[in-house]
Image (cartoon, rainbow over all chains, first blue to last red):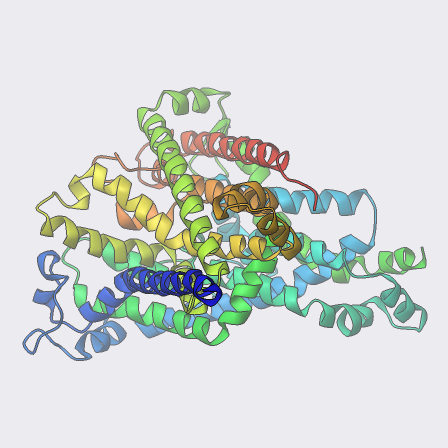
Length: 293
Length: 285
């Protein structure tokens, strides 16, 4: 009798668990559907992508193979845009991680009014909407000329990203540096290291987990950013991927849907692949990045 | 003390690069932006001071008031939906459900897709859906545009907020939950009396992020509806960009800048009020 009583709630629990898994599996399938739909449509001929037929699976007659992908790469300049996006993201994130971690360490270790003001300004800049500075920032980027160095090209726009992205990075780095005991750094200084050596040999390795979370957050931002590069870069010469997609959808005249779908797939596939490979780090990064609000 | 002295000499190496970029990329444009909101201008070099005219015109601009109303309606509904759904999913995925790691991976994924691309994916999907049920397409259907934006926002943000809630729920001490179980608390009681009060810091962060994200939404708005039909689905950020770049006439840039300052003030006030309101409900662990 006793064993029966013990078994029953266990069994209902098991069944409930199974139902839960099935329900979640269905929700997840629905959740993935928009992406799946774009992939399916990217494999169809133009007439089968029209609004009324977008839900159809590719059939023998509407299947177009990789034709749309060829068009996207050859006639819409996808590869070039991919290259610009890749370079801008890589250079900006590198610059942000390097400069902001050094800056954050400096203002956290030197107490004083300057450090305090800088920290508050960084926190403040995180809340300010981009529209507040977009016009003046794009004009500054267009006009500024430091010894022939201009900031409205894909090769130098990383400096603008460093400026506008510094807030979040400095904020997160400072929060973490405050939790590191200062004694190790002082000992290294007494042993004859200069601050640069202290930073790169002692602080930098400890900062690694924060580097990963800040790097992920900034990569997601720069890679997907649309308005800043649109205002700063010359759209006739340089198009990042979001600019390319908006350019073709927003332009007058008929836009071929097939190559658009292929471009969208080519844009999100690498991101999803990287995510699946490094999802442990990415999810952990977001978790620790959010702990300090 | 010695550290402070040594560091002082290294100011140029550690501080100047970031500080210079920060001034060029944020501080100077911000100050100039506030100043220009009191001017008439078409570039930063031909600004003529004209007092509060821009603000008067911004406040009487009907499209701006409509965009404000639409944004508020959007922000309230999307914030509530995102946080409730994300919290429920987080609760389920912190229980011992089979396959929870896969589910977590799937729910977070849309977050990595950029706003412009997301908007187009959903535009294609929603238009196909509208045509299947015989309704007007997004460009002519403001109701569908509104709910489309909400669905899109939920789809993108739920995964992110879910991760933050999961992190919060995992930090609830096991001893508390066991004590509640021994005292005979039902699972609903455990959720409302223990879990929610204990994850208040996560709730603060999630509310803050979802409210400010909703208010600042731009890319998704541009690519899903572009404000159509007849500006009925235009949100504040898009309204400001359109005032700057889509309207002819010398006066509009100044009005746009004034709108941007108002927008900034609204976001700051909402963010601070919300932080103050939920911070006071946090319990010390």
